[in-house]
Image (cartoon, rainbow, N blue to C red; front, side):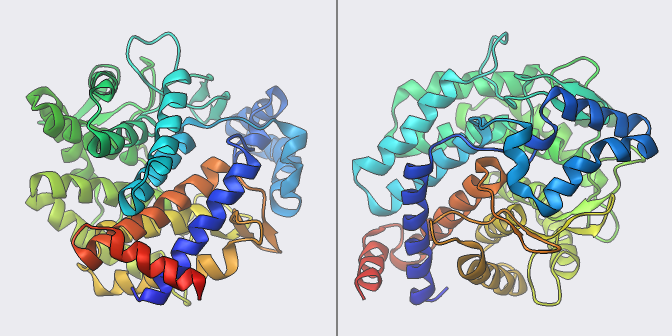
Length: 422
């Protein structure tokens, strides 16, 4: 990536952090339309009786497509733990690049918030959504731990610990790892191969491929951090499930349940990111092979004719948007993890970065959430995906800093300061 583009990314991040200071740490959410009792009832009816339920959810679907700001009529602004974890990681990257105490202080702030907002009623640290979430399998109640949220928080604590080596983070990391190890039941699908449950509930659904990828990655990181073989053994069972679930064309369905056989952008990235992180830790050759096949499918099928992230290659239903900020964020995250290995992916990621800085960032510093069929959804939502994009852009800057001066961020910082002045 060129020096001018790096300077643009850094300036974009600076505008965003200024916006975050003004806007605050709560926001509406992608699920705000369905978080109220009425919204959940309409969504539940849709899952039970699709024809009648379509009429019930029609006002929400219409608002999502043509009046996104109507979210405020359906639910309230809230703090989202998964967003707090991404902000902690983003500020930790900035602390690595530019040094100084301020960015580290802000990363620590989000960790302290996360400790206060953990799910109650569980012995170990864990996190989920702050609202009731209606799904096709039932209601996940507010405060239900989610294996798709917990790993981000683990990674945030681990990243700050890598910077300051403060021993106070160690018990929290151990607690999160123990929660992931003990609280999610497994469904064996073959010898030493198992899918993990989405939540700790005894009737929680299994078969969701990114859920097993998340758990495998967290536990493999914990095995490396704590030198505990129990974490690795459980991680390998879930990792084998991910390998076995890859389709011949290199893709992964969302779930192996005979129903949710769609292929979308950011869930594909979730799986590939987990494999890339595990490969970096362990040198796993099966990860390498799965990544090769997965990336080949990804670059061929999940980008449009302009090379921009496309939400689906295999749709579950009609959608009301053309492009999704979440897809851009995860495209960049994955691209940085695999930087230099796949020239076509590198080219695509550079284009996505350029597009998101040009078209998606608003004058106030925040980012648009979706490109709709008509117009934009410009409601800033921390979980969808302001925080994810912030994290991806700071991750990109940290990677470029390392490439420029072998890990010393001073050269990048001087470059950015020079460009900003100019």
